[in-house]
Image 1 (cartoon, rainbow, N blue to C red):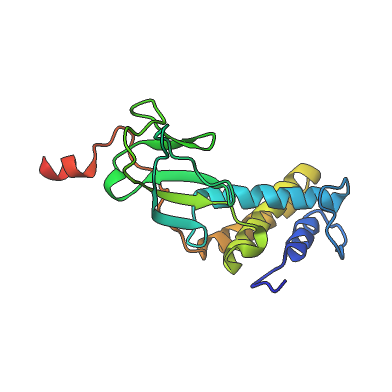
Image 2: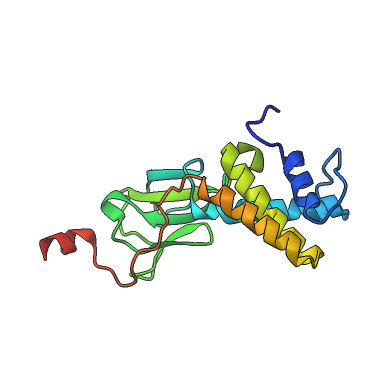
Length: 194
């Protein structure tokens, strides 16, 4: 499979280099080897960063229609949706994920009362190979740092990896969709009227 930027094997080798392990020539997905552990850390970091929402894994104002007769919105599971936020006419709503359903936290229900479309910004999980090339670098560096912190006690190595991580982090584009909103904020329409 052709890949922009590093492959998953390249990333696993980067993670392993954080504890001075030799490079490997193949993945050991699901195994018990050190490279399998490194791959699990890479998968965890991939999920962690995908949940933040980046340009490569965020869909803005995606319309979801509640299904009859339950009038609930069921989120897709492939790719899995990791985070949602109300968008467009629904941006004022406090919508969250409950299982595979969209839950209106303000109303305390998954029932939307009608089959009118609900608009959401969604962050989806992507396979490592499908990430933006610079995001791959960030994910791999983060996995390397987490892995080295668990399997090595070198404070000097941690400082070097932290510095490299901050450099890669600084040059990555941010989506901004899932930045924090003030707690108890008023809907935008009401703020404009007041």
